Image 1 (cartoon, rainbow, N blue to C red):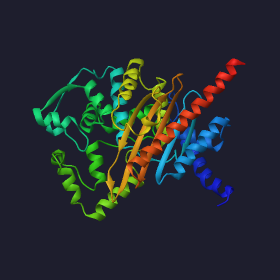
Image 2 (cartoon, one colour; image 1 turned 135 degrees about the vertical axis):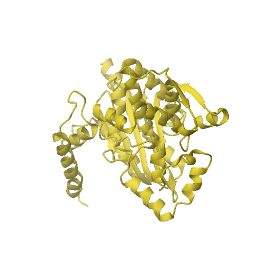
Image 3 (cartoon, helix red, strand yellow; image 1 turned 120 degrees about the vertical axis):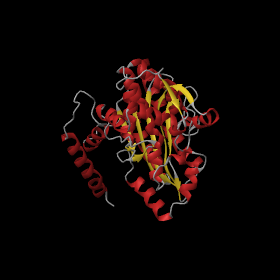
Image 4 (cartoon, rainbow, N blue to C red; image 1 turned 45 degrees about the horizontal axis):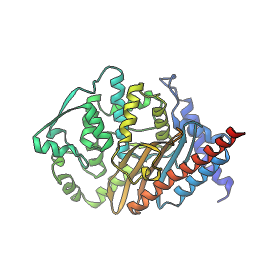
Length: 370
């Protein structure tokens, strides 16, 4: 395929997308624009890259292009206000990455005086969900568990607890309220989707019933779903993910969080500190960063069907020792390769960013010495 033909295939849809979205009226003109629109517009008339940016861009494309699966990668150098990506304008399933938007919405309500983090909440059997939910063991032992929303946020982000997340989601007003938070902050290209019970049962070709929260009931029911129905549900989710998001939008959202554009100062500090304590995915993006870098991240992991993984993700903010911060998102829509191979690819992306940071730091040192 010629270079000119490749340009037409890529550029025309991007230009149309940019024009359509830019001309769409915004209900909140005071907020930053949607990153998908801005990135699409940038690629119609791209700004010149520095040599270091060109090298990083080539590395990102090499890593993404050689990975055996459908992957999206985006890296935003927050100080330089530049995003580089591979497949970054496409929608990728978020899975538990979407817990970040629930917590952002909750902290937004804290800032607005609509929620106190110390507010007590009781978790009972009817609140239990599916898959990873360490809180379930406490409820089963005690019959119920009383805690507060600060604790539920800690559990939802650091341990990716589905029950903690869905209880916060209910308190803030449900999926539409979370989507409104995203829309109001210029992030409407990020789809929140819905609660974990509805989403995961739908992907499996099931309709949720609370009995699925007990023991292996969900897995047993999923095993009974006819192959064709299960396959159709799985493929429908991947083709148009209810929780889909472009990696370029994810990294811009992280950048805005870092810059204090989404929450008050105290709430921003609380969320960033919580993300630094994330326990899930220690061998994903985080393992690619040197020990002296600060890592704040959130993982997401989807279901497997027919030997194929859906939604294997990690996103985060990575800060070098000299204080320069990068937002990174690596989102695998589908793949059959081993988990160690996926982790290695994610780590390689982070190492490429670290090398980029080292190079520009050395350049800054040279300029200072002149």
